[in-house]
Image 1 (cartoon, helix red, strand yellow):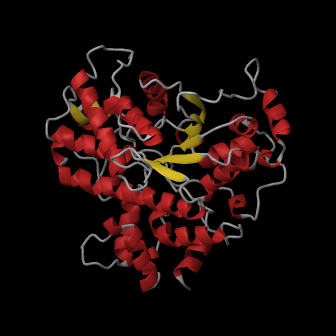
Image 2: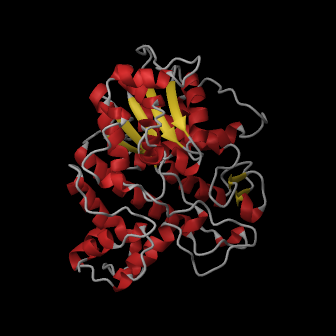
Length: 426
């Protein structure tokens, strides 16, 4: 049995790799072969015989998996990298009372592998029908959100996401206002997996776990109004079709739209165990776990770009936090007191918990990354003061300038952001 057949037939809690049938199957198979060993905790994978060609492809997409740096990837190295990237239990023990984070294994309806979604999917209905469905649950709010065609170069954006996207969604409009842009932003979000692109597609369409109970908040507006871009937050075990369904629907009604996926940021689950003290962290550690995240989402977006050239881009929040952590170690983030509150106990840390939610003030760094990627402009050029809630002295003007500098550096140096140092599309 070859590796693809093995993965396809190992059906357990994750029924994700049944025989592909969709028109998108050729790209999906290619992507699956590249990442399957990293995504799923399948016992015995190291003993299965992967071909040299398959291992070579995985190595090309995930060079960080080659831990001994000999230029070749073994099945054992592939398994080890998978376990580290997707939260399999490490050899060490977490401190008492600390959660290991969000679950990385969960059941996905086998309908995702069918030729098409169920006939009653809202996406198959007319714009008028979709609007009417959502109107019954919108209450006094309009069933369709829309924004006039901007005269100030602002983008009209729809988005899904979870708590990792919320900080940037909150600060982006304020940053844009200071830059002279009236930002139109309409989102359908949730916590954890409930904010993922897959979950929201099922919920909006009334399929699978939401069978015949649709909540087409975004679909009603996408199909009945003009939009320029869509944004998403990533989630564990993401597959290309979780995004291609949204892309296909958006392009049907707004052919010029572009799409942006955040790549989150380095998290504690990538380590074998939670460090006892912050002295564990070095620039080399952040280089390692930062590159792992970088490679993972670059692989997903590259696969999508093969079907949608120059349409899909990365919001490099991971690279920004990776850079910020290194600046902190050098003493270059004034007012920031620690790396992670759960380890060092400091309130003003880069991260505040085991899962990796941002510490106070870092919502501005994420917002600057969003702004820089979407508009191809450095936030360092914004001269108008940005109003903030809470303490007026944090982030300080000096720290805020560092955030802007870091965001621009992360964006222009990421090959899939679509932005160059000149601010033009790559």
